[in-house]
Amino acid sequence: MNLDQLIQELKFKAVRSSGAGGQHVNKVASKIELQFNVVESELLDNDQKERVLENLKTRLTKNGVLILQCDESRSQHKNKELVIKRFLKVIEQGLIIPKERKETKVPKAVIRKRLKDKKIQSFKKTNRKKPDLE
Image (cartoon, rainbow, N blue to C red; front, side, top):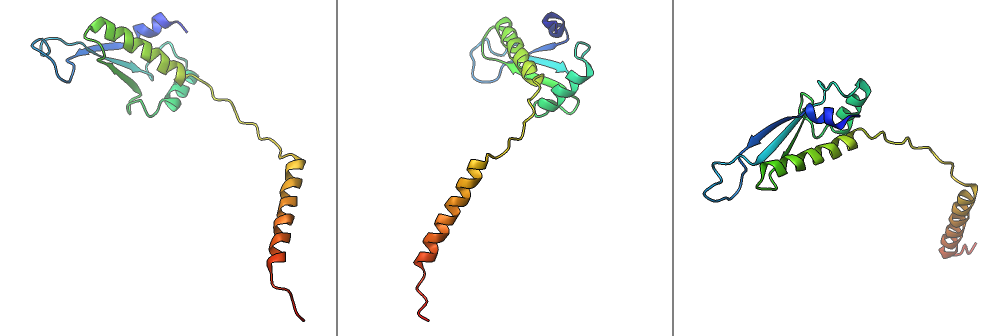
């Protein structure tokens, strides 16, 4: 997958950062909001789109849009770099194909040990009973 083309599909919006600030805070939009529409992406094929929609369903909007924000730095450019790195990690996680679990057979030795332990436990409990005097 070509990362440059993927980054070109992103939409960025600069927003005023929340929280405490100084005299300059109400004039500068340093927080970056990244939007990526998974459904309308031209770079991802249908299988990849389905995988991303399934793996990232808790992070997507109802329309299939991934929204990430970054306001860690006071610099808009630094925040943009950080949010792009975070986006690439998220998409990489979303494209992972989970391995199918292979059922394993329970070893015969384990079954034998369990049955032996059950017999021992049963023997202990029968020995605790009061003897029959008849």
